[in-house]
Amino acid sequence: MAIRIERSGARTVVAQTRRVLRAFAWSFVALAILGAWLSLRQESAAREADRVAVRCSRASGVCEVSHGDGSNQVMRIQSLTGAAVDTDGSGESARVSGTIQRRDGLPTYWLCEARARDPEAAGIRRAIEQLAAFIVDQRIPSLEVECETRRADSGTAAAAGRVIGPIIGMIIILLALLLFLVEIRTEIDRDAGAVRVRGRSAIPRRRWSIERPVAEVDGVMVRRRGWGSSRMWSVYLHFTDQTSTLVLFPATGSTAKIDRWMAELREALGLPAQPASR
Image 1: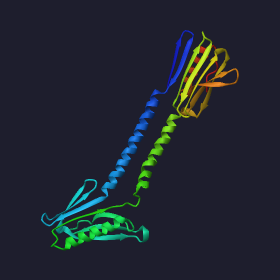
Image 2: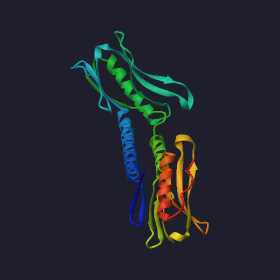
Image 3: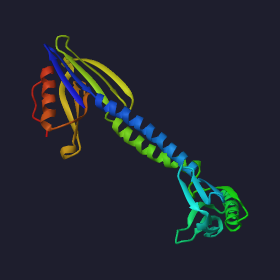
Image 4: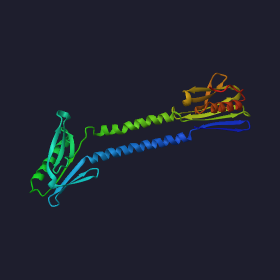
């Protein structure tokens, strides 16, 4: 928050601006949009990475496993002992996995997995069946098969949920920031005998403008919220008809700083000094 008090003869201007906060809020919006876009890109990349292609050639003596994310795994055909479909669980929650078994102490290689009822499960079984036949039948010169993983939480709704959750959190933080986006300009013109206050706030979104005679101002009030170093101050001009208008909100800072601003307002209005705030 920037508070500027300028005096020129009988004219005093008190301006509360939030340029830094406004710039930060717009930057936060830009980052939120960028974060959502990157999350969607990551979701898309994850879905593409689920597709696996296996290409084997007797002539080269190797099988190459290519993943959708661009990673590759090369295996010697002689190191392969078989391929199988493993089922974990039962009923609708059962999941099937396509695996490649290897000798020489090499770990089992997992290709794809899906729920037993998903359409991808049939593709996994078909790919593993052809791969198993190739490994044991030396007469098959080459093989190209594909399978695709479908995660338990995959799908448009789940992907949207993973993106929308953080966005909602960012919106809440942004709204909290915008509550402080209040800008007010107060002009006290003793020659004209007038007080003019113009202000605007982001939440709630509104603008206000008043002009009252200086003679109708009977005090400068301060309202305090919070405790200790987290206190916030709101400063008002109080009028003889028991109405008031906001001139600083929310003002943060030491008690001495608030007292100085209030003293300058009273002096500009020709009001007597009052005891310091506590």
